[in-house]
Length: 182
Image (tube, rainbow, N blue to C red; front, side):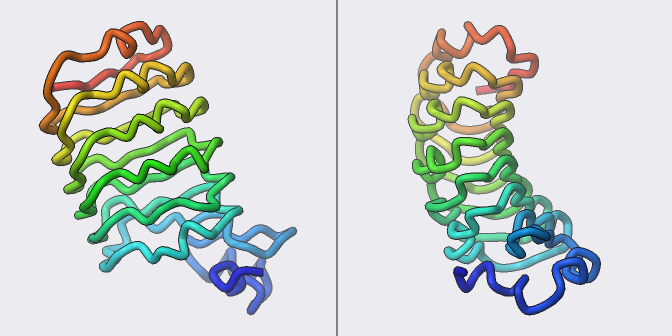
């Protein structure tokens, strides 16, 4: 067992689910499956080992005081919801989210992220919601976002993008919320 996951072994999992507010562990495997820590006024950066929590399905740190870069996600194969909005995260959006094939919701709204939208986000076939508005992202909007057939919500508003909105994004018939404001 990886050290990052072993703290659930130190106690009865049912006890962890009731006493460790915001942290859920699998009863079967006794490992972390959800970190729902939104609005706890947490301060600090996201530790790099978070990318090793291979059974993590929900990672929610929105509405805190988190700063620094988003760590590389190396083993988050089961991650479905990544909610990091309303923090002070900096740096670029990691390009290796393709390691998260089950990702459905990605919300990085209202941070200080820079750089381009990674082309690799277009390979997230199950992504339903992508919200990266109100950052300092630059460059052109990646046409690869048009490859996400499951996309229903896309918010890119209030960044520093240049160029035209790719036609590929306009061809998505499932998108019911599109916020561009560029």
